[in-house]
Length: 212
Image (cartoon, rainbow, N blue to C red; front, side, top):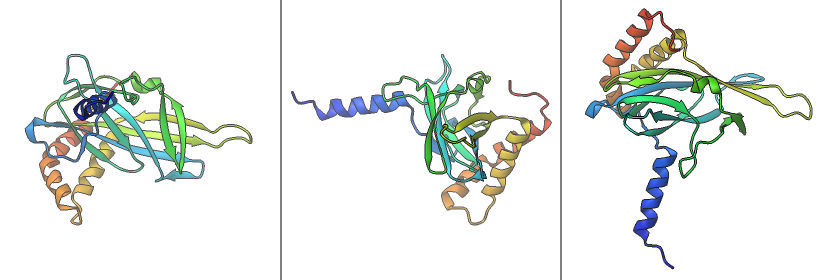
């Protein structure tokens, strides 16, 4: 029996939505969009490295926008992702039909590892993302411990969402966006988000409350 191309396309779109969509990077805050700011720190036995990657989901809380975004975390990169306004939580990535994975896939220095989902990340507070606002989530740290002979290496993943870490992220991306060599599309995004970045920095520097 032949399956109509339209049905195949619809099923593919449904599966993609269940497993999470990639948000626009540094998109302008038009239509009242919000944004989240994330960064990565990958540490190998030899020291901090720029070779690495991990992905996790940013999921709408019940009663919110119903979005599931897949966030890519890269080493030493401040990534501003545009999202729909709403209340969110962090979670593991999902399979093609929407079931959450039990572990994270972490890449560091050219090798992939499966890491149990860190429960302390799940325990973080709800992340409200109001329209035209930036939410600095924090720095996801991946640490590869040296392995003993004939033993598997140990990977630790944690979220540094301290005021210091989040303030440094905002400061760094402000400096990056002021770079005269910035691509025209990134410069437009920088201008659009500049006031809110300044507001976020002001809120962080005057806050005395931890997120959780």
